[in-house]
Image (cartoon, rainbow, N blue to C red):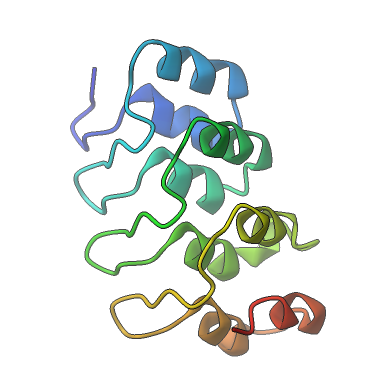
Amino acid sequence: MLDRAGRDELHYAAADNDVVTVKERLDAGVDVDLAERRSGFTPLHFAVQGGALDTTVALLDAGADIQAPTVPRGASPLHLAVSGWRLNPDGAMIDLLLARGADKTAREKNGWTPDDLAKGAFEFPAALAAKLHP
């Protein structure tokens, strides 16, 4: 059952790095790419934004759309990983998304790529930024 924001328990479990609940909700037939109403965030967006590596892996393994854009900004999960890099300062989230095929040239509504976001982020690690260059 969805809450008022159009979110399923899957969204919250993804953000909380609760792999057991993520798998239960997917096994129950919840769409891995279910977008909530307000921002179009899918469970993958919630996992990435929460820095939840284990649930990010579980969602990607279940076929989550690695390029799903948010609404209206059009940010991909990689955009969110770059914006929230401090949650995984070792670069594990960014590395995971890149290894799984995230498009580092994807542009959000304002035309910014993940590389552009990294360039504008205070103290963004140079070694990590180099991985985002197209």
